[in-house]
Length: 138
Image (cartoon, rainbow, N blue to C red; front, top):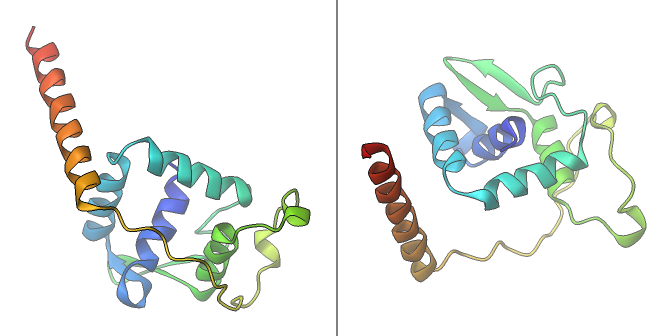
């Protein structure tokens, strides 16, 4: 799991892009234990901006016991999530070149996780937890 991409994704999910540290830690823990899908997705997003540093580049502000994503942070996240055109697939955007927010791109909505898939995933995690407990008990 890429920490910096995950922080950006967590913060943009909050109203105003601000979250206190307890909320950020909780959400990060949930995503870290959600499986390989999230880890692979954050690696793919991070590969699009290899020199990403959310703090030194001003993508995140520390304030009032929490963090807030800046407009520049939102723009960089939009760049990472944009689907590249075939000719642009090899080009990588420079984070330092992003000065003002980019206009929102129209991406198709993410497919919702169906209740059946959620239930299946929950049961799989429960089975794995039981196996770990049994292995540690012996």
